[in-house]
Image (cartoon, rainbow over all chains, first blue to last red; front, side, top):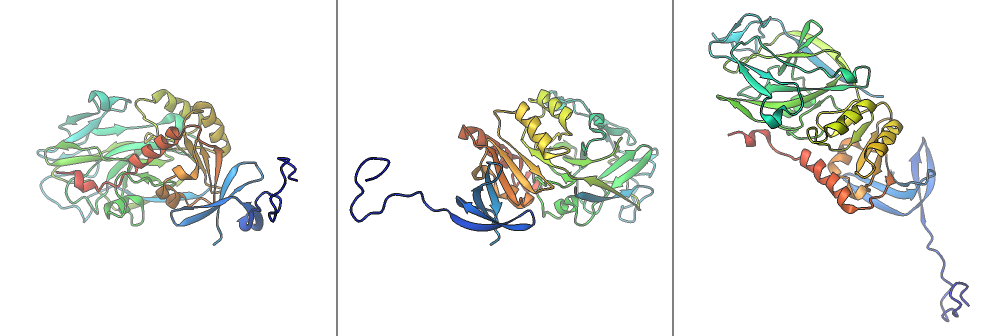
Length: 65
Length: 306
């Protein structure tokens, strides 16, 4: 049974789980930090990794790539 | 904070670059030999453009044309001087301005590598926004006197008192040969296009908080946190950005990176962008972007000249 809906899980399908965010490394404060990436944005020559920073703000950090 | 170094040129005597004819101005600006010359006198009060009183034409070549002193910004990170310069024929290689600094005259010169020289070399067009630089050419204003034209430029620096002197006679300039060096501090900038004339009260409020720009695009302050706090109070419903030049973080308010133009990212090269507030109304963010792009329009300066 699915815990949320009360409906039986479809045969052959595992219970639904939140998508696993890709972890990427960014250079922050002079060291490498793993963050859970929510997306990527390209602006001009630069590519930014989107994640929620420790301050709770949506943050776009320059990608090390 | 980073500092921007600008080299200027002290004006005494005619430079070898100055063509010597029977129409030129002497070095001290008090004995000008210009048969049909004239000086341009500008008003210093806001709003002169709308009622057409910014300019008067004086027959006296040694007329002081501009005294633009933003005393309210003294002891802040910078203030702005708007000047008018001649854009007549063959001004490349010539100094554009003569500044009087508490008694001494300084003739700004086109130094290779500065935005001014880049402009002249057409690497930077008029209307190009140059964040964290000391020179910015916000737009061209064409005022024609005979065959001569004037354009507007802007300087951000740290002088306490500046007067501009100018003498035009058959495209002649006062130029000199003594070098002069000064620096200007770059600071966090608020990026919020304002209309100086229609939003004058807001300008005054910004002035109380941090030095501001007549350009209505970039206002300099002491630190990004203070600027964000002030802007939240003054413009809670507008879109704006603050660039922290110490952390290289671009803070976005009522904006997301989608609305930040690539050219601004190229100029600032922020390490990070942080969304303080996502836009509740896309039109607000779009208006910010449109105004920014409008003031950064790539318009070849000569293309507008007849």
